[in-house]
Image 1 (cartoon, helix red, strand yellow):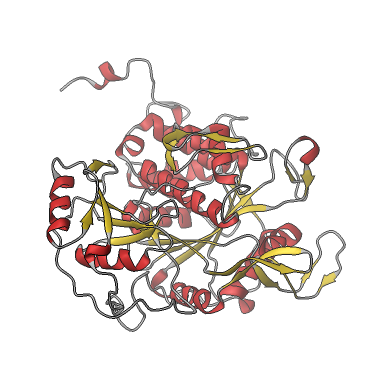
Image 2 (tube, rainbow, N blue to C red):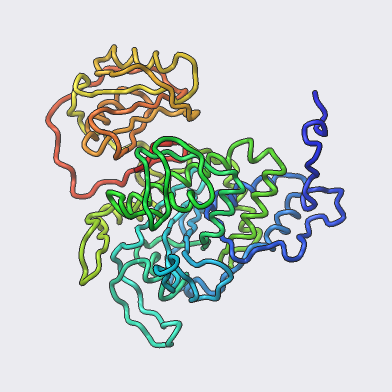
Length: 503
């Protein structure tokens, strides 16, 4: 075995991680940038979990905790708030703010040059629910233009009482900051927010660069002047300004903010995969760099203590990318009008069902009454009408060809030759276009343990990314005709392990 000193000759252990250092866990003055906020709560928890498990880790966690900014008075009195979720589940509200730099509250800005405008706004609002008694999490994106009821509040600038009214969700953050946003979301959802975490663009750039960029995939080239994005189609590692542009662009996207949310979820999934990788967690230099950036960047509510963060970290340490699911509040109308405003109208029935599952701490695909998956809808598309392209996603030699032959043997119209899409997948995923959900159900039913995922870039042909758990394909019964979609359906769910291209 080689000496570790031979591998790392010029990289002394950072003082705050070196037990021999006289500075120990102290941080030098001036080393913290108050401007930065972290994009990824998941990076924070993963990094803290490593420290919490290490010898003397609690001391180091406390040292890093001192670098985290605290926001006062974000929660309403206890009598006005929803009940806590069962089984010690936790819900974290993550907000991406467009304030920049060392600015006082209300001095936020957006855009550059002639397009610069003042006022704090949010491009990203996420409810991250950590299920109790489980190593699963659900990350729910909330469209910022959702038309909701804003509860009555006292205007911070004038002190005047503003009556309850309907407006875009983002206006709660703009006019009343974190406290009003939390009240609005809790009133909308009935879900209790246990922790508030705020980020801004500087923190986003710093964290992504500390991770040396993350890999994303575009189904087509992306160029748009306002966001500054200029990326080719395909898989690529991005960081810096292009990473920021990737998650901010919404002009020229077919579904506007919903497609931007899909990109943000893809990017968060990439951060989860990279942060959970051994390369990040087991390299003390990489880990120290990420921790320095993350903890200097993050702002949380003042009620979240170092013990709270440590406990969250200990829970998160057992997570896998397959256990982190992403979804978006169900939408009924993406371009409705209210006065002169274009707004997003939520699907009330489906949204209520999603929020109910969070309140009851019920993971996706199960019901409160029974842990078993819901009954299957009858299959209506015959296998020979389903065109399939096969990809080996596990990196197992010959797995793509085996899956190709298995699917062909039970009647599917397999096209092309098996190809590789090396994501290290364990679960097989059926990717389908917007009008091929019925075909995807037939294909998924034929593949035990598989899941489906919408990919708006796909047309008639479905993509199957084969995971290492592949056990073959089976014949499936098909009956009846295609049924019209229900008025309220469960939102699409994907996990951090899934890595479909976005528009």
